[in-house]
Length: 223
Length: 213
Image (tube, rainbow over all chains, first blue to last red; front, side):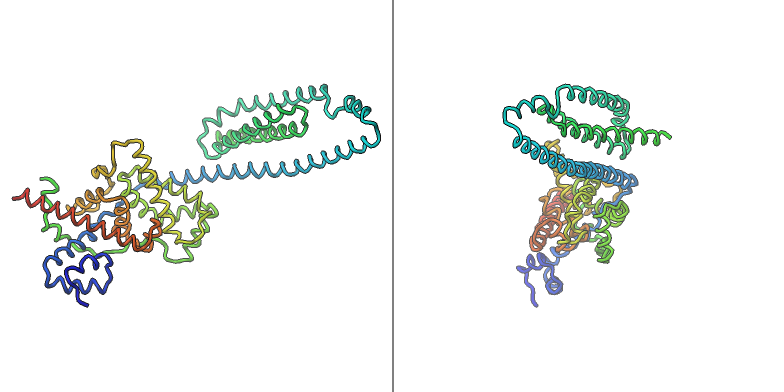
């Protein structure tokens, strides 16, 4: 294979061994091509010295910490979502059964009594009376107040936390608080819905458990 | 005496010819690579530690050459590891795991550069080759220093291909996967980069000759 000066760019672009061999033969007789080819190779050789190296003993611990925090965060999100799904599905099934039973019950009552009488029965025996609702609300308020007290003790510690575990607890508590707000907003729209109240209490129960776990972890860390 | 004055074709061409070594540090054993992927997918910290041990030095070099300072380079590597952790589940093995992690790293470096540019629009990294502060100079050869200065003036894509091929020893096939470009484009970009560097070095040498006379 014979190479001419005009082939130089093609050979340098493709750098195929056969072409390079032919170019070397050509550069033995052509000074301009020899100079250009030499510089071309010098650039590659000098580039090898651009490899940067430095000691960074703190880099892996930094990455390790970031990965551990990420892992804790994803675990707490996963456990919270699995917790939600674990109680939401049975709760929904239970609610459906209750609705079905009450529907059947209402239909049976309708078939037995006149509509006017039926209205009166509903007024006399509502599912959740005002008095019952007040009792529930006051009991709930006392329960919630006790959890909020616990929360007031724990939250400053969680806010200042630096360990990955406590940070993940902080994230979990934030999620729980968001769930509480959502439940409360739903209850505001439908105060007589017993299922929503049950849901709110179960979220509070979760908050109580989490706060207690934080306290245990905190004590453990202090030790 | 300025750097440009010290540079002449005499010392450019008398640069020692070290054996060009291909610094492919990735595990060549497909079984080991597969174990590493599985470990990473399971979220095993030990797998990430191994990844850092094997690829960390090369990742550091790429990040520093793309970003220009050690602090940003280390931030980019940390961020790249987090991105790998978050998205390794989506890795389907269409490309090699090693090229995939370098793609994540290069994209992270580009993101970081964009962020910095937005923050300091006046302080262009490209226009400030003196901003490159390696912790350890490999050699103080004038060509290396001039090359480093010239590299800063290359188009980012040409520079990335040049760094990955000539400095880090990747093959065009791997560069194509890392930068999501066709293999032929990688060859063309390398050719353009080297031709541009050659032109800059000629100019630099001519300017040195003029000063000397």
